[in-house]
Image (spheres, rainbow, N blue to C red):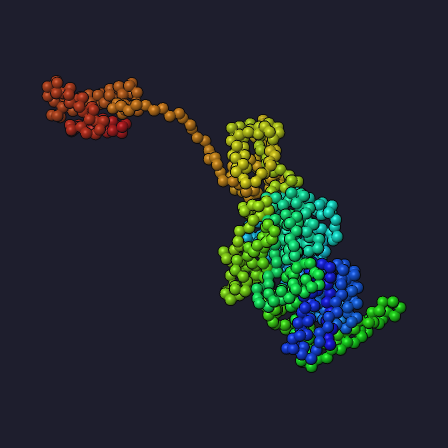
Length: 630
């Protein structure tokens, strides 16, 4: 007979499911002749009573009973303490519910997590946040090892997706309603409306009751809850409609366990046993992991014994130094074969109720996956899955393991969600915080170009084209942004624009509005909008429409100008006639012909089309001067 310890809280959401599952697993192991054929597995269980101190005492009492392995604890806080004990006594510790990522193998070599670490769960939460393109979340968590470790992992996961935790709302353990109300009230004052709740099953429901009173379950809010709420919902044999009304529209994660005949048979067996023992709660995913933990221990012991190892315990000499102490520490024994047992457990490889039970180099299960649920009505519906292999999908993870990994953003998909307030529109995820400061906008008050920006002292007296453009842009935003105009200058002389832009760069102002020219030295200090006014001087003239006329060609010159022009050409024609008529036959004839020649020559000169040839040098000189003037 080999003794195996179990350490958990009997009267808890996880404990009620795990206790019966562990007992049934021990019975199944002892009934199966293929495992531990000549050895009987005996169970030694201790109740941690939801207390770190009592849990530690119970764990020490458990170690006195020479157990070769311990299944549990379910609390991450107790896990940190007990891991030091099992490291000293060389007893492997297999926890089916301690999900704190800081329970690392490097610090606690004898700690083995037989469930999924919150490191993966927070990566699933970050994938959901990134899928809906939110950039900031508010983390509401239990202020203990479990809560702090999970939120730390969440911050790291969000950072890889260019998001962050904008506010951490820590709820102290065993807090009353007033404390929770104060924490949520402060969280509600912040701008983020994406709430990530990482609490424990036994106290977490009070968070939503208080949030409902603070009207934080209305439209516009987003609530993403880790797997503790799924354990509560699965364990509720009869749905509490009053409690369900507080959690409508939540997105909840649940540890994924693939559908199988073995899982269905065990669920039926667990339900029958629960009814016969008067257990009113239901089975949750932690019960499946507790069942598989027992089988992992049984297979490890079987291999340990098959390799010829003996189950022996020896005294630890360091526990005998305090002779005057009344603590019976000498009763604690070191498991001589603990190192060999640990190695056999790390080589575990079988298919259980939770799927493939196999540990990677980091001692985590090799195929972490979660169901993503949307709470609505009196229950919840499945909207997708997350796996470390392919990210978000609507296909079950076990079907994706047969295909190439595809974690690209294009491949990520979830079914439609009904958000709080019975809304199907994806919330934008933030609002302007109630305690936020208005946007400080600097406005130059100057003596010139008051049509662009002008005003007196005070933000209510600011006017101008630039101010109208700014206000129109603010009104187009899908969220309210209160602004406070801060006037700079006395209105008698223009303020220094470089100084105003320097105030923006120094964070004395959040923005500046005015007729700022975009020049090189200013672009090094601040960002500018696209220009909406062209710089430079322009002339604006009224447009007068005149009726068209055949004499429109006369419009360029006045009547006097036309008369002077005609007189000059006639004068040129007379001068050329005087110089040419004695020697040139074309300028001779009757007086009538000579007058006609003078007039024709004068007007044809305007178009360089006269047919009379000039023969004298003086005549040609006169024409050259005339052409140059034209």
